Length: 198
Image (tube, rainbow, N blue to C red; front, side, top):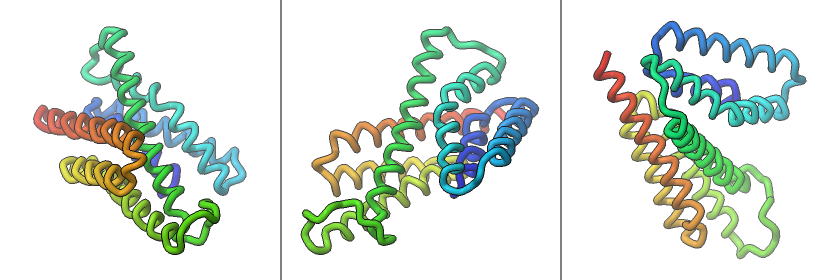
């Protein structure tokens, strides 16, 4: 999945439930920004990473935009700050888990980042498990809008699988996975409320 598709997927997520005109205006604005950034870059992996970096840094602003547009009401500033922090934490936790399992799965495509102190076959087994967990995370993220319950189940399975397979890292995988699942549940509930209202 390209960086542009990830950004546009995120735009669809955080503009859900916002009035149609505001949603379309925001999507056009982001598409224009992406086009300008692509036109100014030389392309390649550096351009993809630049787009992803800009997207991750802009998540709090995106959530603030959503809050200011949805149903025309403003939340008290302390409550708003907590919500922005919670959404940012969930997004960063998701990116962290995708990044870690993606990095760990690189041995399957011939990269050797692990060093030489592994028993024969352990690196490949570790990489296979990480690739499976990465697939669950990505599927959960992609399916969050069309099938929110399935997406939450996939993200929960990825969290549980990471904690069981890599039990020594469960103090890291557990809380980050819970943050991701909690964010997914909140999005799924928000979609149910907005679809019931329309």
